[in-house]
Length: 269
Image (cartoon, rainbow, N blue to C red; front, side, top):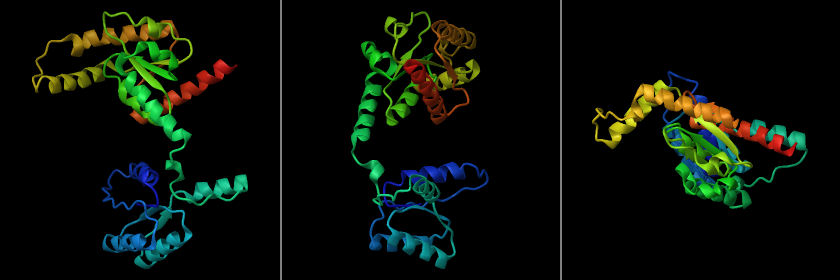
């Protein structure tokens, strides 16, 4: 994987593609911030020592040509992961690209917006600073261990001000949550059996491997009742719910974006 910037894009593409090959165990070699001929020479030497398919994101034509020529000589494929998209957009917009590496990582307004969103998520994690919920874009709620915090962190990294509020058995939901008008509130839920497994693992970590804890926190019947009560609250409040049992954090976040887009369209109309 060769990049003239941080390598996030080519790494993400590589992992997405390789996940489709169950019997392949790749060995990854990454070179980032490749912007000089000298650095490219080191990259080529590395490919010669450890040959394999090359994925790259390079803007500079000279470096691209140097890399592709070397790969042709070595006998390995060289694939530009951005070219198909770039060419399609150039054709559509009928304009030339800027041709400067790393533009997506410049500290522009969007960058500082993500930092602000991250600070917001941390400050409003796990029911903290309830008075600030009204300033959120989205508020996630649900019982314990339904991935509320990691999902909020992921959303914040995408620029959304995300907060989360836990639903605790026997404790009324906070009035600040129930009275929200502007932000979208989404309930996260999970299969009780899976939830019990996750909670038992959590208890083992907290009590040094002793799994004899009798807490209702990991009792199946108690958990079923807890999940059902949370679902009833979401239904009563007309909050959409997402079952995260078989969803990754990224998949949950994608579903949140879809719901938020729909919510914003309804607000505008």
